[in-house]
Structure formats: structure tokens, C-alpha cells
Image (cartoon, rainbow, N blue to C red; front, side):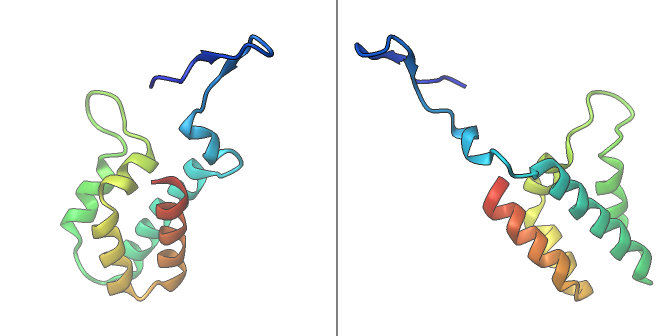
Length: 105
């Protein structure tokens, strides 16, 4: 990530913006972790077999390579997660997903 590093004549400091400043005070990682917990809970409650969701949850702890963080997984599969929560009728999880999508993705 490249920052705008212009110097001002007034103070000699770097003036720039960092797009991540807007996330200050938002617990994106914690909220993504809660979404993952909602997925796990809905998998347990449902009486259906969920091969995709088993595969998805296994991505959190891969056999090799670095583990992706929960926010990445949520962001990369947001439409599938939304559909799953809709099928499960979990409005609280949908609300949290919408919040994470708006604030963090």
C-alpha cells in the first residue's frame, strides 16, 4: 500500500491518507469471527448435510500454507454466506453479515 507522502511547507510533516484509518474502532476481525461462529451454529442446528460448509470451515486450518483470516473468508464468500443464513432463517446473523460487509469489506 502506498501512502501519499507530500510534505507541507508549514509543518514539515508527512500529509497523507491511509484508507485503513476508517476502520479505526471497528472490530472487523471479531465480527468476522462471530460470523464464522454463526455458520458453525447453523450447521449444527440444521439437519442437512453441508459438504460445502464443511469444506469452507476446513479452510480456516489448512493442512499446508498460511491460514486465511476469518475476514478474508467472509469477504471471499459473502454471497454464499448470505444465502446460507437466509435458508436458515437466521436474521441476527444476516444483520451481522450486513454490518461486516458495510464496515469491513
